[in-house]
Image 1 (cartoon, one colour):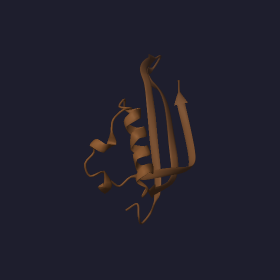
Image 2 (cartoon, rainbow, N blue to C red):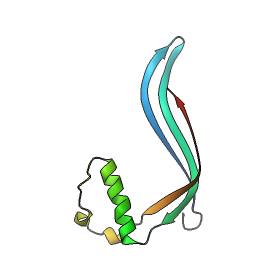
Image 3 (cartoon, rainbow, N blue to C red):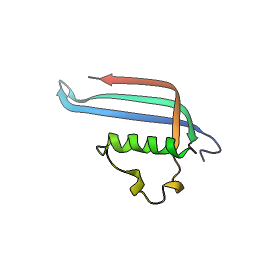
Length: 90
């Protein structure tokens, strides 16, 4: 599907806390939405770099990608954003 139309929309949230207010509850948060294009990577070094950044983000900075069998069969996309907007309620 992305080969036919690489246009994508991504969204992310950070929920800080839920708290009571005078007439109910509210959520304290930050969020963004971005629009761009997804390009599939072919260079194995760039693929490994991207995967390493993901494992690092999730708390495994020293995880060896060489442990991953079938890495050459993995399809990895890189999203280049053209526009980003955000909002927050802190």
